[in-house]
Image (cartoon, rainbow, N blue to C red; front, side, top):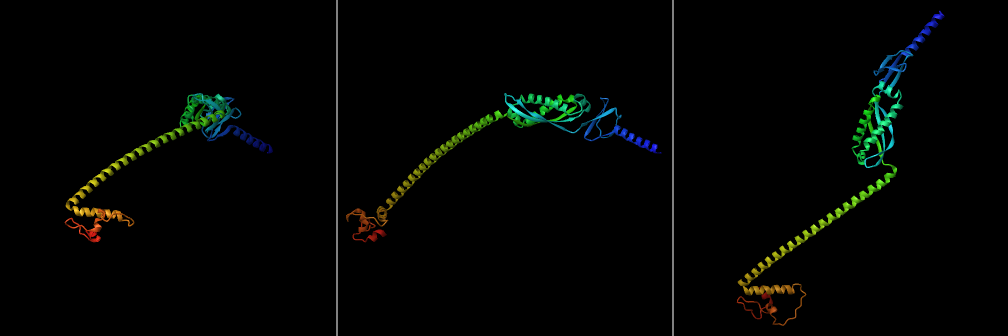
Length: 305
């Protein structure tokens, strides 16, 4: 009885060992290459439980997710012999495990070494025809896309698909950075001086135009004023002449009163005249309608007339 139990237990153990060596699972993020005595037999890319010949066939697992490889920074010569330090990275995916295994083996070291060589050569080739401003401008994605296409074409025989190649950092060598910054500063200063000079020129031109327009306006205003003044004086002269023709005695008296107003209006004027001076004639006698002055008339009579 004990022997039967031992045999049963041993059988179960053997069955478990055989099952463990026969059955294996494939995860959703994996793909499997089955080899038999080192030779590829089949590729399994569907997740689930699968079987193999135990102790004869070997399961090699490959990641089917997107993989990242960062290329070390390297110096690239651009168009115009301008040097640039470029850091980049490559995103790839294993799409053919059999070809991948035959090309570089089961690990990632081989494919990374190959990617390093291919991506570096493509970067140098593409950037060698570009200027610095192209790399630093919005053209960078287009440059990276061209590098990606070239790398993907060259890596097609390795069972991988290059999804993307990105330029992460593009810097000038340390020795050239300060010189370029100084040159950029000089250029900005030159542009600023030119802008200030153009501004000063524009200011002078505007001031000159304003002064010329002011001079023209003042001259036209003076001419208009002189014209109006002349017309007014002419009209006043006609009015005076017309008034004189209607009543010469009244006009003479009125003009004399205007002279009195101008002479004595402020109340502080002093005149030293002889009594028979014509300027004081209205204080001596008031004018009569017939044109003669009444002797001994009061000064107030002349004023009221």
